Amino acid sequence: MDLCSSLLSSRLSSSLIKPQLLTSSLITNSIIPNCTSKKCKSRHVLKASAGPFSYQKFIHFAIDETKRRTLLVPSPLQEKYSSMTAMDGTTELQLLSFQAPKMRLLRSLSIENEAIQILDFAVFSRPEFDVPIFCANFFTTATMNIIVLDLNPLHNVIDQRHYKEKYFKRLIPLGLRYSELFPWGGKLTSESLKFFSPIVIWTKFPPSQDRYECLYSAFKEYYKAWLELIAQAPEEIDASYIKCNREAQHKYLTWRAEKDPGHGILKRLIGERHAQDLVRDFLFNGLDELGSKGFLDYFPEYRCEDGSVNEKRSILGKSFENRPWDARGEFIGDDIKI
Image (tube, rainbow, N blue to C red; front, side):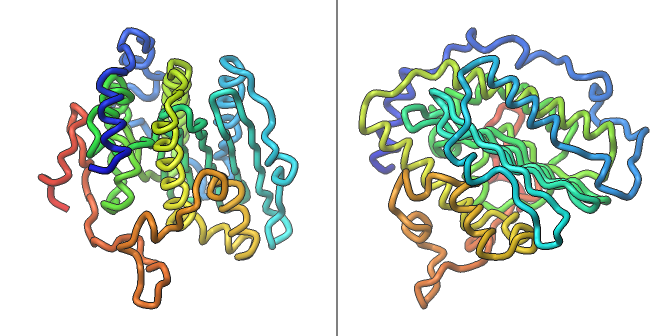
């Protein structure tokens, strides 16, 4: 166990978020009417176009809900990143960025045209807080939706039980309900799994208005849960813990900036140079401010003989076909077939 892990373990054991502070709305069994069964009914199947899907209401909800709870102001990034036009001359990339007293960056990228609908929405806390990172990555085409919705843990919940207990114990029922509605989406590499929580929604499904509404319900509940967590989080004053949080967030950003599967789409839309700029300075802003380590410093197993970064998604070659957490949120990945 490294120094940061030891420090966090000792601190977390005495600073668990009190369960009664989490509102009952997060653990109730109520869901919107169309989402009460294990499978969302698919009565309204959409036509073969991505057009009817729009993630704008997801963004509007998140911003409005955040403004209700804290002072949200535009980020300095908004001056440079507001909208971009793709090389096809028609597809628009819409970008929003904000900050708040406890939030280093709330940012959103949305892309919508006749063929695809994309939402990449995330919120990062300031290093003085160790709350998870809110993450929503949605990709929709005429035939398929690929979805990741999670409160990405700042610290590894597989190795650091105290951190999992602090932030996820009371959210397990919420995750269970939506895991029934949205089955596990297939293989997920062991390297990527370190950045996900026991309540992650990783799923795929064909276009369906009912499923879309279920996803909107999940997004709202997960985001409200995250807002409650950050509202309760006390500000850290110990420099050693702040340093650990800063490095953990920098490690996360470094992984995502290098291995995020959405980069290929951005390159096709706006070209490699603009895509790299968008990824590094906007989507995963903080790479230059929060730390100086490179990808291979954090993940040396990806080093090639010539010193470059291996482009493979997984070096271990281990992936999880089924959900690697049980109904109690316990990691069972070492015991299930991969």
